[in-house]
Amino acid sequence: MSYSANISTASRAMSTDQLRQAAPSIFATEPYFKMSQRYAFIPTIDIVEKMQNEGFMPVKADQSRCRIKGKADFTKHMVRFRHVDYLSDTLQAVGVEIPEIVLVNSHDGASGYQIHAGLFRLICANSMVSAGATFDSINVRHSGKIVDDVIEGSFRVIDGIPALMDSIDGMKKVDLDRDEQLAFSRAATEIRYPSDEHGNSTAPFSPEKLLAPKRVYYGDDKLPTLWNTFNNIQENYMKGGLRGIGRTGRRTTTRAIKSVNADLATNRALWILAESMKELKQQAA
Image 1 (cartoon, rainbow, N blue to C red):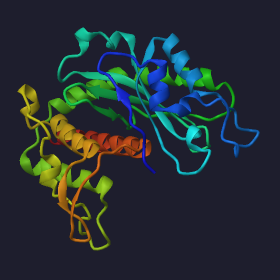
Image 2 (cartoon, rainbow, N blue to C red):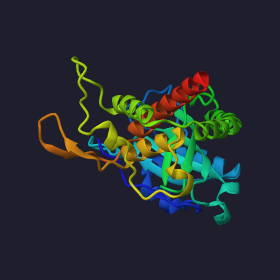
Image 3 (cartoon, rainbow, N blue to C red):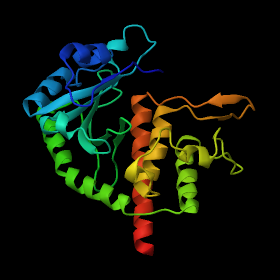
């Protein structure tokens, strides 16, 4: 399964036409025909409009593609929202972390409504989704007062944003030596490429390659902090392009992550790993 292109801007909300182009399933007017009578259908666009009324503007959208005839307009989709307070051009400074709300849904039974705390980091335009005890995602089933429950869940996620930003500040204060960076990279490799039954890595690249920056770094981005290490690895995973040797012995290049499921799972797993490393370093200090 592959995923459609998305539209994302640093400081502008998406228009209705842009949303429809990026994720047509947001505008489904009925559920997939195989859904039962108990399935409470609420079009995602209703949630989007309610979020807009609350001051949260859509800035990015994706949806899955499906090869099953007639199902493409009901597949899983993701919309990222940013509050109007964070859409000002004056706030779009390099290296600044901007909080977002990430909404996931489908109209084919593959997913209920999910609300996650997200971050957008302007310097490399990489998006990340937090996870862990402090930043749990919220799930809303397709039953009852869906719109109210999603909006309530969004504000609960928003309430956790200050703690999320504090956690990032903590990661920026944790320095890693080279061995610690490599240990982090090896653990991160297991997220996408679990070792085989003999303990051998199945990744087509080395831990050093996963750590390598994809761009020229400036200022504090050069520092060997946990936060910068996390961002290097996250960007390499999300954008792909790492060259190496696959399990068949042939040269290969990793692909960018475009799947909604893989996007969420990879980002959340990396965040948990970074949080764990931060706690270990703080305990050892």
